[in-house]
Image (tube, rainbow, N blue to C red):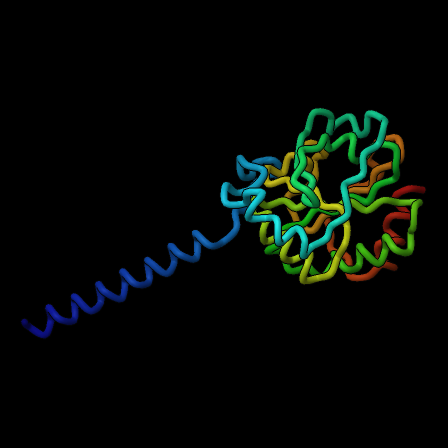
Length: 211
């Protein structure tokens, strides 16, 4: 075989290897929709069966999702998502009804979200019953969400919303983390498309939104 032919084959082999590597990176990278609500068509992956999630749910030990008796935010009526604590389908509006809510939108692959979740838990501890923090996981990989919550030791209600239907209904910008402050009557007080690093910062932002 001529030397030039060997070099040509070697270059082709390198290019093929690079193409395969880039394809794998694209496959492994979580889908990030261009617009809120334009995300995956499923609430969670087919692999996230009740059996597959049983042990991760035990590890995460999440609290049950609250349910109010009122109608809740009008924009969320008939928006059905999953309560990650037990896998039951819930009406998002009913979950958020009859209470002042700090709604935190996140995904397992979002670094600032992982930094923010413990601060949200500390804020909830300080706020007590005056405010309810509810989080929304916006990726269909529910298993990864449960494992992250277990790793962080964060015990907050989680709505599993791989479709990002809640963000779409509330017109939340396509950034994560993002926080929505909801008044007790269900109206939106403020959308905060920014990360928080401390309970103090969260409290200041929420107080300002509710004035």
